[in-house]
Every structure is written in structure tokens, then in C-alpha cells.
Image 1 (cartoon, rainbow, N blue to C red):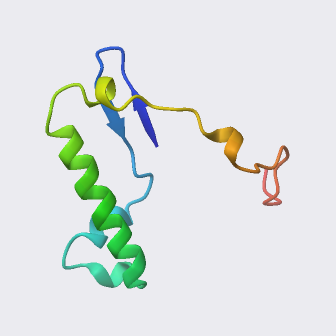
Image 2 (image 1 turned 120 degrees about the horizontal axis):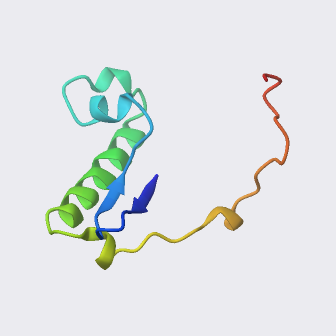
Length: 79
């Protein structure tokens, strides 16, 4: 998830505890090496952009939800 705060700061949230494991010695938590490679690439891109202040002004968030088919009802069977 990525959004921009009023200050212009970009905010990135991976939404998973295993993100950090993919970039460390604990790679066994991420079994597919392709997944670990993508996570590494995304992490480097985020860190590169966030090394400069107000990344959100340079890289504004865009709403892309309409690009995906999302169920309008709960499809997991859980409430």
C-alpha cells in the first residue's frame, strides 16, 4: 500500500511480516526465489525514492483499484 501524507511524505506499507524475512538470512520464510527477488527489487526502489525528502511529491499515489476485478461481496465465507 502506498499513499501520500499532507506533508508530501510518501508512505509505503508492505502489509506482511514476511517482507523483512525476504531481504535477510531468514529467506526460508519465503520459499519461492522469484518472490524474494521481486521483494528485494521493490525494497530497493522504495528505499531509493525515500532517501530524498517528500517522496510523495515526486511520486504521487494513483488510485488503481478500477484496474482490478474486486468482488462486491465477501467471498471468503467469513463474516
